[in-house]
Every structure is written in structure tokens, then in C-alpha cells.
Image 1 (cartoon, rainbow, N blue to C red):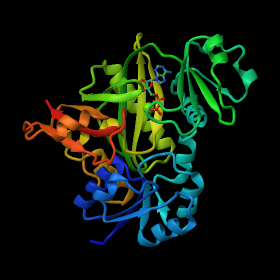
Image 2 (image 1 turned 45 degrees about the vertical axis):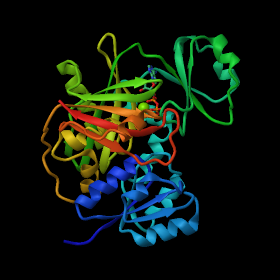
Image 3 (image 1 turned 135 degrees about the vertical axis):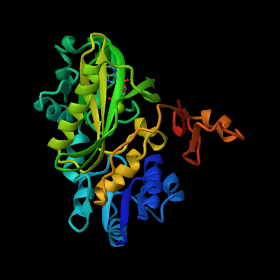
Length: 348
Ligand code: ADP
Ligand code: MG
């Protein structure tokens, strides 16, 4: 068996879980992250701290790895493109460039005849007139948002005029969907029409941050099938290699909408570690490293709770867990309000 060293950009909990999955497959990992305290350094073989535009650090990173993947989407396209000139980057950088831009992402999804929320681009103050149609809505920065950051709920034009919008950035105003439920599909694409796809996962958010996930999702058969079909179409159209997540909204009339695409492993898929024979992380490593594709088998139904901020403390102090409970501590140095600190998966 040939020895592979995989480079991973980003050192948060997703990077940690990718490194753990890689180790299980005897793949070495080098993590490159701009945070010197990145938790994933506890789990990888080699850790490089440096800014994502440092030529020196990038070249140090490239020299140590055979290929490169990433755990979050907000990496400068230039960095990925530069690395891709000497070492293969998967998923390919153009995918990342498309998806890190909310407007380009939604245009792409609509071209596939897949429903998204109604949206409009806002670039300047005068764009705000005549937006009645999109209200109530949520104003989102087109780039760099996550966990509800860079998002403003807006009820009226008046409200919109009152907030001091920084127009050096671009925005998308999205019509608010009257949500019945949110689900996500996690899919790993290996090559043309070769997939492993997990069943829909039902997600509950609090303050725009994921709080709970569970399988099975309580949805009808049509939504079950449509969400999987749409995720497959998106992955195929992107010629994606690796694990991808599609987040969906279901409205009160049981219409399905794509909310957003995450070109990476995803928080809602943490339960795949314990509930399936192969986790989303292992599948990602298998796909990008060209390893064998193993048919997915569900082991158990499951639910997951995210531990935010100081909710982690009581779990850290817990001596014993039940046999069906799996606690993950992300080992983040600092507890911050609403920060994802760990999670617990319960097999049910
Ligand atoms: P992030 O990049 O921060 O995950 P999302 O666009 O997924 O941003 O928004 C986070 C959450 O906010 C969603 O999962 C949903 O609960 C809520 N939300 C966002 N946009 C809408 C919308 N148009 N209608 C209803 N709820 C929304
Ligand atoms: Mg989201």
C-alpha cells in the first residue's frame, strides 16, 4: 500500500474529525491553519500555523503533502488555485469559488431547475427601494458568513433603511421562508455517478446556529426522494470529489428549497460517525485519496446535540456516559458564547 500524506486546510473540529478518520485509514495528515490554537493540531501528524496568503507557509505546506483538501469554504480562491498548480486540490478550487459566493451559488442552483428561496442582489443604497416583494427577509453578506454571522432579519423597508449597511461588501436579500423543518443531505461523490449518500438528516437551529440533528428525519416520501435527487444532481453538475452537504428548507406547504451548499463535511453529519459503518469524514478521505468505496450501512437511528459555549463544562465534568452516548470535546482553548465546543451523539 502506498503511503499518502494528505494536507488539510483549516484546523477546527471538522479538521480534527477528518484527521481522526485519516489515521484510521493509515493516511498521514498535515494541517495548515491561520489559528495558532487550532484544535485539530491535537489530532494531525503535522501542524503548520500561518496566514492563508503567506507564500512561505503555503510552500512549506505543499512540500510536505501529496494532495490537499479543506474543512471550510472561506479560503481565498487564490490560495487554493496556487496550491493546485503543484498539488491536486479536492474538491477542485473552482467549486469553492462558486459556493463561497451566495449569489453565484443560488444562480447555479436555479439553473439546475432546483428551487431556492427568492433572492435579490444588493450592491448599493438605491437597490433598497422596491424590495417590498422580498420582505420579511434576511439580509446576508454574499461572502464569509457562517453560523448566522453577517445576517440581519429585516421586516420592513423602513427597518432596512435604518440599519447602517457597509456597502463595501455585497449582499443578498432573501425572502423569509415560513419554515416547517430544515433537513440536510450529505453525499460523497467518488467519480462519475459513483456516490455514497446518507439519508436526510433533520436539523433544528437556534439563533441561526445548528443545535440538534437527528435521523430519521420526519418527512414525507416525496421530500425524502427529492432532497436526495437534488443533492446528487448538484454533486454531479459540480463534478465534485469528496463529501458535500446540501441544506434544505421545507415550508408549511411541504415545498422543498435548497438553502445552501457546503463544499465540505458538515456539522449535521457528526452523527454519521456513530450511526453508519462509514462516516462522512472517512468517506471524504476515501474519495479524495482514491481509496475503495464501501457501500453505506446504517447501524442505528441517532440524534446529536451541539454543545455551545459553556454548555461544554458539565459534559467535561461528567464521569460516565451511557453505552449509546458519544461525547466529543473539540478541545478548544477558549469557551466563547455560542461557540461550538463539542457535541453528543446518542444512538436510539
Ligand atoms: P449560514 O451560512 O450561517 O449557515 P444560512 O443561510 O444557512 O447561513 O442561515 C442559517 C439559518 O438561518 C438557517 O439554517 C435557517 O434556520 C435560518 N434562515 C436563513 N435564511 C432563511 C430564510 N430565507 N428563511 C427562513 N429561515 C432562514
Ligand atoms: Mg447554513
